[in-house]
Length: 436
Image: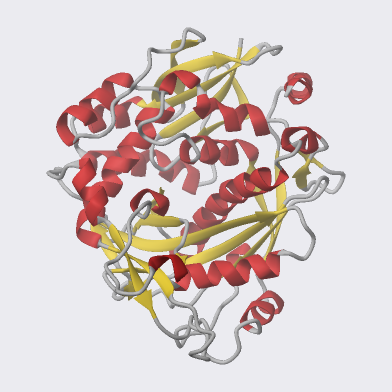
C-alpha cells in the first residue's frame, strides 16, 4: 500500500472527471435475449436507463465515502481495528484522469489487488453502483434523501419452513434495499432495489447483469415486486465503465411500495432483524420449464412493518460506526439492544471538528502514513444530535436542507480541505482528507 499513498501525496487531491456509462437498447437486447419469452421479466420488459447512458461527471471522494460507510465490519465488530478506514486508504490512489478527461483505474490497482482481484472488483462494483443508483433516482425520478441498506443483514441463517431439503434449493435476492424520499410527500420513503456487480474481465458484464436481473426479480416486499437497478462495473487497469439496466417494473408513485418514517422507534434490534425478511419458494418465470431438471428457487420476501424501524436503526448504526461515535453506539444499545462497542478507542485516532459550508461535522481523524494529511471520518453534528434523541423525522429534515446544496450542483467546502477531498452522504456521513 506504500506506493499508492506516496503517489497520492504528490497529487494531494482526489480526482474528479467523466465516467463512461452504458445503458442503451443494445444492452437491453443483449440481456433480454438471454431469457427468452417471458423470463425473467414477470410480464414487463427490461429497459435501458437514459440517465445512465453516456458520459457523466463524478467525484472519487463520493465513491470512497460510499465504500467506507457501507463496507464496514458488522455491527458487533471491534471498532479498535480501524477497519472503516481500510477502503479509503486502499482506493484513494486507485484512480486517475486519462488524456481524454475520463476517470480510469490506475496501475496502482494491481498492487491493491495482488491475489484478490475478485474482491477488488466486487468492492468497486459496490461503490460505483451506489453512485449510479443515486444519479438514477435523483435525475429520473426527482427523489432525495437516498439511503442504502444491505439486505444481507436480514437474510443470514434464515430459511423458510418448507418441506423439501433446503440444501437442494438455489437462493436468490438483491444486494441493496433503497429508501428514497419524494419531496412532495416527505413523510414517506419509496422503496427500490439495487444489485451490484463488478468485474475486470472483458465482456463478462452481460452474464453478470443476467444474474443481477434474476436476483432483483426474486426479491419482494410483502409479496410485491419493486423496481430496481442492475449495475456492473468494469474496472481493468486503465479503463472504467458502468453497465446498467432497469429491471422489470414501471415507476408509478401510487403503486411503488413505501415506508413511513417513524416518529419514535419501539422495537428491539434483534427482534426486528428476525422479522424483517424470510425465504420463500418462487415459481416460474425463474424456474426451468422442464420439471425433471427444474431446481427449487428461493427468493427473499422483505416485511415492511419491521423494516420501517429497522432501516432507521441501521442508518443510525452506520453513522455511529463510520464516525466512531461510542456514545451514540452505547445510546442505541441501551434503548434498542443493538450491539455495543467492544474495544477501547484506538490511540492512532484523535477527535476533530470540521467546519463545512453546510454545518459543523464531528468525528475522528487518522493520519495517513507518509503523507502530510489525515482521513476524517465523521457525521454532521445536527444529524448526530437528532439521532441521539431518536428523532428520525428531524434527521430527514436536516439532511434535506444540506442535500439541496448538492442538488444545485454546488460541492460542499470545508476549512483546510482541498476542493474534491470532501464528501457528504444523504445519511449525514462525512469524509474529508485534511491537510496537516
